[in-house]
Amino acid sequence: MNVRLHGKVDVGGNILEVYSGANSNGFHSGPGPDILARAADIRKPTKPLPQDITDDNKPLGPFPNDWKVMAKSVDFLDNYDPTDGPFFLYSSIIIPHPPFFTNQTWLDKVNATFMEQDELGVPVWDPRDSMHPYDTYMSQSKNVWTDFNRSTIQKVRGTYFAMNAMADYMHGQVLDALERNGFGNNTIIMMVADHGEMAMSARQVWKNSHREPSLRVPMMIAGPDIPRGLIIRNATSLLDVFPTLLEWAGADPPEWLQGYSLMDVLREAGVAGEEWNAMHPRPNHQHQQHHSSSTGSIHLGGSIDSLLQQPGRNPGSGTQGGHPLTARHNGPRPPYVLSQYSSNMGNDGAFCLYWPPYKLIDFGHTFPWFNESSYSAQLFNVVEDPWEHHDLAAQQPAQVKVMQAAMATLIDTQAEDATRKATDRSLFETFIAAPAGSDEALRERMSKSYKGFDDADWD
Image (tube, rainbow, N blue to C red; front, side, top):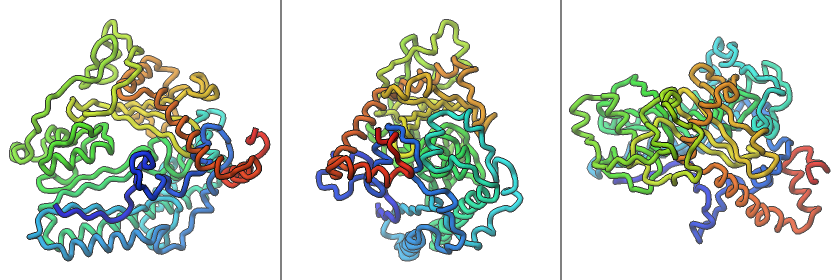
């Protein structure tokens, strides 16, 4: 297999401990107080105003190297000799991603009527006093807590949409190269993204949130015998991508992988009938039940409503230790997926379980200011309420308990939160406090990360 990687490849966390010869610390732009001191709950902006990072006179976008990445990918395909055997091409660009830079060429691709519609073009914001404290912190940290006029919101949001059009064009160049070089009929293509973009929804920009605009990403698969226009709606994670590609290539995913191959989903959808299934046989895995509560097993194929209707079931009981995320691909695919976030612009650990049509967002309670009363779980029906204006947790406590029990089979949220916060403190002392050398220098460093940092914040 000829492997070619072009573009962004994140090194991931824990790199300093895993690789002794690492020449990067695992942070995008260096470890900063805004990341490592987040649990101090300093409610001051750490980012510029959204309009200050929006520019519609940037023909190459915010990351000119994206064009070079695509050019290298096209060059690889134009010069590849099919007799060299199969290839794996990873072609990754950064856009669409803040800062919001584009030009008129791509703005012209954005539907003007679309931009005038509420929610789509101009998000409807909930009153500040009705927002969850986790969400208010994100809004304040991202510098979207102030008021903005309609035209400013439309400019930021429209520029982001235009960047999507630019990204679409770039990827199209690679697809055109596949076709003209004769690889179109024998190549599997998967298009995904690592995160979404709030783009002024819910008083936020950037990613970092478990709200729909940030959490959801595109996943498109094309290739031989896969029909055009097929839409499969199920709970899917980016952890599923690697085991899917391995199985598609004829390899068994190793036991330590955390995701599930999507091949079963494609088989169940009957993408090409018996012939396709014969070409992609189901691997001989031993399927084991491994999602359970202390009062009996959770029927993974059932709906949340069916679980609530089981006589005598206590939806609040669960294995608090949680099961490690290992060898999950060998067991039955559950109807839910897990996401977690513990980094900058999020003051507390946040954990999300998506079990259609519901989404549960729960929080860590390691520190007393993140207590269960203030940082209570949120529950949204994202089918009926896609913009997440109606938190149903208070009205449907049984639903919350069932989803918390399911989450507990995947992760011990409180242990994980405590570990993350301890890690942040250790890294803060190593990268921020120790190099500062004095309180005066440390306070100056904090003031550079938090706009308006004051005596109350220091105390």
